[in-house]
Length: 191
Picture 1: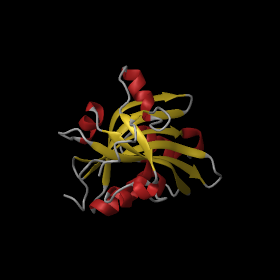
Picture 2: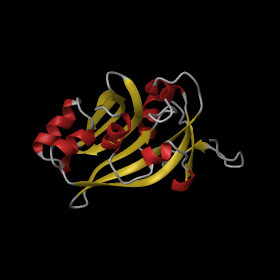
Picture 3: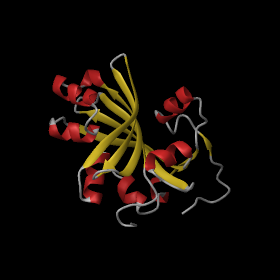
Picture 4: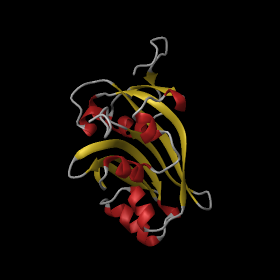
């Protein structure tokens, strides 16, 4: 479902933060994106994006299998881990392309070790380590699938995808992570 043509899609570094940092480091232009209201996000994207749950368990429920992690890029600076990742269902089906900043100073030592190990999605670590947290979507958006996004999600064609910008807080309201999550055009209900 496309938005009306009168809405101008442009690169928006604030809307795509922290993904914009990876594009800047690679010298690539940001894909065109436009913010949309939660009610304008179409199904099946809506049920996967418009909620206050963390993405990993949401995708596990939707796909009926555990979600794995494929790290594409990462950088650790001043106790903040920035990484560009693909969440995968089963052995290799890409189910989300994400850019995340993880604020390690708010994690217990074992959870921090697991995050730095790069083997599990953050949502899995939060759950298995019993870290009380809350999810706060800050924006929903429609984005043009450029070569980077298509490559990450194993998409053959260009098109418009949907995503969200999300904030994860611990029980003391410290920022655990800021994340952009972009979903592919095929979903469990449309496959």
